[in-house]
Picture 1 (cartoon, rainbow, N blue to C red):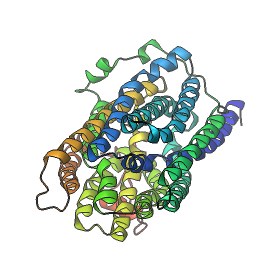
Picture 2: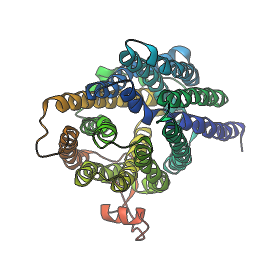
Picture 3: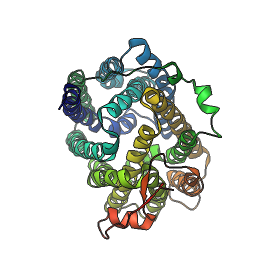
Picture 4: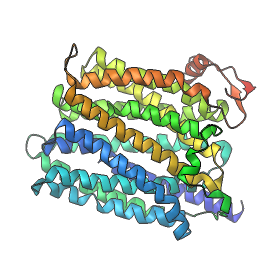
Length: 436
């Protein structure tokens, strides 16, 4: 093994350690921002803002991530700096309880927390793509996601248990414990990230292209059409997505433990399935998996309207985790396939920009609809959002992805054979093809 390969291998080990502690931080925070906002007295309008504003600011600020990396001549320095900034946002969250404008300040802090993480992602994605061989990305990132997913489940369950124990005596203390622990976890991840090696990357003048240049290529750019598809799908998803927590905690009266178990089932299903999704995507193409799973993602809200018992919703969310695991993994890896190393940071930034703006607009539209729509024949207003989201998801998943093209030579498999193979019920039959 040559020295460069040795450095890459060691860096991937440090990346796993970094990822473990990042996952612990995520498990102690992401699913509990909305419950804490509700504890602070937040309404459904505030929940919509909490989902929309951080994603919107993050979408715009990460456009500067490639420029910051160019200015610092290092992707690693960008990642390290903004990990530290993100960590410092966690302790002040608990202090919001004692402020007069507690809800507004909390949303502002979460916005800074999210924006800091967003700046990291283009540089991190570019760095990791350079460390992992092209033909092993699906398998590696699938294995990595599975490993870190186990960590996230354990962390999310632990945080939920802490809140459950504190719920009847001092819920604020429970949130204080989980947010401070998340701060510690992020600092440990920062330590391991700084140990990683950054491969040299030759920057060429033609690697630079502005957002306007990017958008102007819609007629000829397969990658831009892919970005538009994912962004529109995310818009339809986020019309309802932020309000599932409101449905469970306020409308259905779930306790923190029931909420945690339903939420965790998606992560558990993703853990079980994601490495297998990656192995299939390496063979049949990322685009094939994206097309197939987008139809599954569209069905998820319909299942929520059938029944709202916690046990039933546990299995619905397990199905959700299975579908989203394949979609998210393959969407990310498609970006790596479709972009050259020099352009990759900027491609990831632009992809995340459009995706983030779409999620923000979806959440804002959902919040507005929740206030103006009547209950109708459904029991709660939040169910109206779920129904609207389902209809729009089906439209996006049916009409848009079939105009896209795979960017590498892959093996052909029919959609139903892919699913049988994923479920290990039938051995797949592959044929050489372009994945269309």
